[in-house]
Length: 389
Image 1 (cartoon, rainbow, N blue to C red):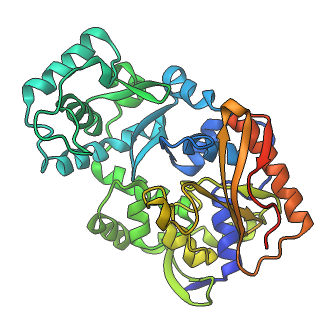
Image 2: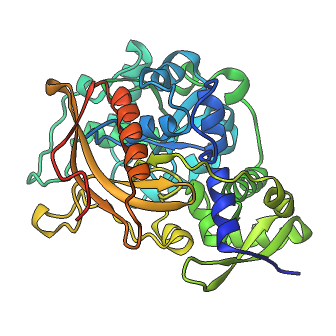
C-alpha cells in the first residue's frame, strides 16, 4: 500500500534528515555531521565563508574553518573526491568508492587526458619521490590557442590521476590542493578492504535513500553521482519489500510518487519539528542543492546567479536563502569585507506573502551576528534598507 505524506510532514522529514531541525548548538562532532549528510561539497567562492565551512557551521555554530582541514591532513578521517562536484567524504566510505574511480576512468576515456602516458608516469614518479605536490610544482604550458577553460597538460594529468583514484588529496593550503599517493593518505585497514561492485552499489543506493528519506530513482542516482539510471533501476527492482512506495504532497498541492526505505513510518513518528530559529543557508547547502526538489517541497524558486552578467541578475551574485522553521522567508546578499572588519549586507528581500515582523528582524540580526564570527569579522553593516518596502 502506498503511504501518503503531507507537505508539512515531508518538509519535517527532510529538514530533520539534513540536521537542521535542532538549534545548531551543543557539543561539536564534525565527522558525525559529515557522515549524516554523506558528504560536504567544496567550493572556491569566499564572499563570506566557503560553502563547505558554512554548511558545517549551519549544523553546529561552534564549528570553525581550520577544523575540516585538520581532519583531512592529519586525522585522515575524511578524504576528498568527486560526487556531483568536488566533495569531502568520511574515510570509512572509501571502500565503496572504488566503483566511482572506475566510473570516472570510463567517463574520462573520451578525453585526451590519459593519452600522454609519459607525462602521467612523470607526475606520479615525482610525487612518489618528493611527497605531496600541488600544480605549482609543475611547469607545462598550454601550447595551442589559449582559451578560457584550457588547462596545461600537467593539470589535466593530475586531474585524471585524482579522478581515477591513482592520487589522493593529501591536504590543502589556502585552498590549494596537494596530491599524494593513496597508500600515504588512506589508512591501510580502509584502503585494502575488498567489496564487490554489487555490494558497493547496494550500499550507495541504500545510503542515498536513507539520507534523502524519500526519492525517485533519479534522485537516488544523483545523490552520490556514482551510479547510472540502469544500475539504480536494477537495484530498486531487487529490493522488494525493503522499499516502501510513497506519495509526497508538493508545496502547490500536487502529489508525486517516490520511494522510501521500510522504516519511513518510524521516521515519520520520530522526526523532530524544526526549530523556529532563523538560518542563513549557503547556496550549496544539501537541503537546497537540488533546486527541483526545493521548488517541489518548499515552493522556493531559487537559482544562484554567479555565472549571470550583473545587469541580467534578478537577485545578486551570491544570495543566501533564509530558513525559519520549515519555511523560506527571505533572501539576503552578504559579504565579508575583512579589511574593514565588517559583514556587509548588500541586499535583502522577504519572500512574497511573508510578513517581515520585528521578531523576524531580531532573529535575522542575531543570525548575522553569529555569521560574522564564522567570517572572522566583528561588525554587521547594512548597505541597504533594513525594512522591506
